[in-house]
Length: 441
Image 1 (cartoon, helix red, strand yellow):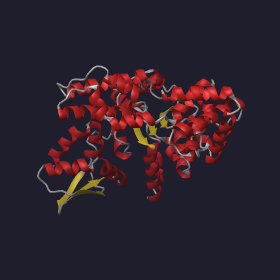
Image 2 (cartoon, helix red, strand yellow; image 1 turned 30 degrees about the vertical axis):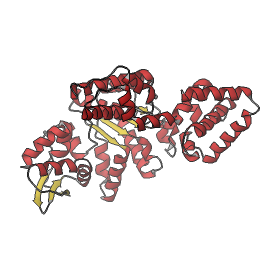
Image 3 (cartoon, rainbow, N blue to C red; image 1 turned 30 degrees about the horizontal axis):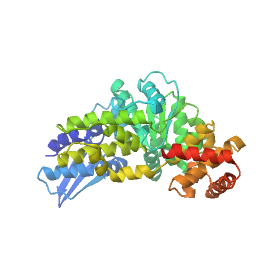
Image 4 (cartoon, rainbow, N blue to C red; image 1 turned 90 degrees about the horizontal axis):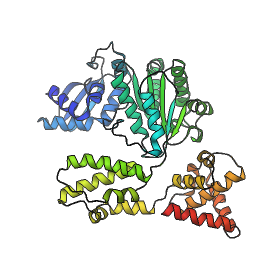
């Protein structure tokens, strides 16, 4: 019975996830509504419990069993992945589980436009798997701009081109969890050996380790060890290395020694391209559904927050039109997505304000957020603070965090300064009116 269910799970979770997470499971007991599995390590069991327990429980019930929950326990008898253990990639998957890769996130499904073309090109270069040319590759940008998509795409491509490589992708949170577990179980030397044995280390959302001293220390030494061995490292974060508060200076310096690439907020052309790609997929899924002209252009204009919101809106729209059996018209779109459209209408992001003000005053975005106090930088920074307070619902402490981790009193001072100058400086007043029009257009 379990063998049949494993094959069903292979189809559901994909080959890589199956080999890494499902195949090593051993069904030890099934009674009183509880399915008990033996697993190789505690970390392995925790990860399967969080990410695949619901799938396993559902398939067990579908096969005629009555299962309320699944449990996992560590045993030395638990089998390893079926791949030959002599292959390094199998050993990495077995001994050092990373995060599952999303099968949808490949280079083929990544829509390239001007805001992300440099990041895409750099990711492609790393994925070719040749000699390390820049180390690390550091990708940063706001939510929903494609960082994680590119990270998964690199891992997929490397595994396809060079299956013998040990490619490890995980979040900074998982790195910390694994490190703390090793400390607790007095297996720190095993932790060090395993992390230093990979050929490509990919860490997502590295800002998570900021302020966590012991984890930062271990990350720094792991980073150095891999660089010394000429192993490739790929890192992502929500901001540039120098702008991550409470991150040790030596780590910032190390992260900046490679190629640092910013994924900019999407522009209209890129959003439209993403929508056209997704719409084509949905046309095949919802055959017979008619999409009226102008709908995609309307959405690309109106929903500017991030790609996840954009794709989510299109998913909802196609599903709704299919359920009610209607053509996707502009009227249907406005009715179905009224809440998303209202939210998009009133949301001007702090990042967009910073970018527009920096462009208007011809200063670098990094200086806008950074520590420099020169007048030609400080005044535009205060203008951006003022606009953030006026045009967004964000609190002063949150605005301060977006301006390089500044205190809320600094933001309050900047806002008051601009309010004072508006009555005496006509040029400043004109600039503010123009920037507001641009941002609210």
